[in-house]
Length: 630
Image 1 (tube, rainbow, N blue to C red):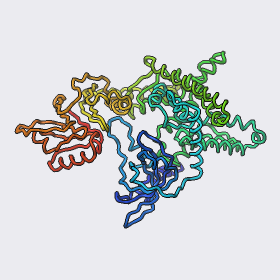
Image 2: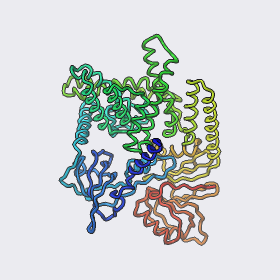
Image 3: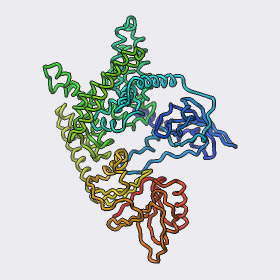
Image 4: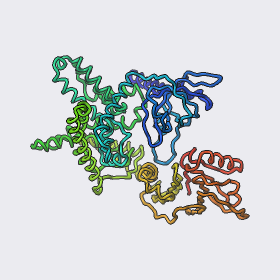
């Protein structure tokens, strides 16, 4: 009965967290012509051409009605003097139609719509200076304002003392407070490939180090070290302020709640099992926000800690060197191996790669990043003592440069990473079955665990074989949702052929976030040499029994009594044309407008297609165009 009550409570909390179920959520009565009174709910983040932030709705007003409302909206302010002066807590009026947050529809790509919906954000808007009016009011929360001021002060000290040459400043900011706006994307990718991205993504490791440093200091302060309640209050205040400064990610919250449970337990002389502390922290966090369960940081954080608690000692006991240096290295290695054993299936599922040299990179990066973290704390504390600040900042600069260069060199080692690994939800579940039951068999020496592990192995390889057979039967054409360039992949069996602008394949970012995920999803490992090169204007490209025509310039068609049959007519890059002029010469089954076209032109062409009873598809509105060609 108790478990049933807890289950129902969890369902109720999840239902209640969803804003769609609240009467005053702005989405229930918002109309395009209405003005919205909003509060800027976090400091603005500077992008290349915009400032990005979250705004909280307060009121929705029109000539006839007024509603008190709530809910968050993702907003992009066009750069300018007006936007530069905006601050957290400012109250502004906006009058511009909101846009639904949509997914790109590109196969295998990150689902931004789902991610934002878990944050209870369903709309976004782009504002130029004429689209909003700044009032004189500011309703900043005092605690949050103090936390943001501390973060800004920390960033100011780091920027004054460190250069961003070779991405040094970005790594320093991420390592200390999880600030990622100045991170170099190439360096971030290198850290990820080496298996040490956790040192720049604020996690329980950072909070644990700060907890240890604070405890060491408090135990040496007279009077404080004898009073457990004062010590607990200082520890909790510092840990939670730091957690809020870093953005309160799921992994940091897990550590903060867990340390809170431990600190209160110590004060009351009630030392619980680490598993109970983990369970208590997870329960409390999920009561606060059930959607954290789908957060990657939350999942990885708990799995890593469970792995360390469960497996670190058995792994460490496998080898007992007498040399103290070797012993310490092995202790660190056992922690890394324990965490990696439990997290690697879910890492493969999300990131489709495995760092083969994770042990080497962690042995170098983790101890050094720990020293750098403490050095940065001392820099922030003693920044006014110029000679000391210069000494510390010089050490930080060269230490981070050493880590960066080492990680790049490790990634250059052949076979340093196992990449492009296909994984779906079922293969991940079966892989966890193999790992967990296999480890239970090794540790407990019970045959039933071996049998269960073997059974999961059969299911895993059966699922793998089924996916391979399915891949060998595929025959698809995909026109991707890409804003500025033409990007098309043709899949036949486990081969792919790219058709599109050369700049797409040469762009590392687009390749990583657009083409690579789709090719992994389709298990297409073998590139075919393309015999079709840009420019594509009015080319007819044949794929077995299907034909594609690409129009990317203004053109004229001569009326033709014998119309050319085309399966897909693709319009790209805003050409000047009318659909009625095209169909006098060709007979398309589908007219597709890719995402490089302007919205107003796409809308005009769609109306023309509807008037002529032609099937049309807008990639900007509907996501990637996928055509099965069997």
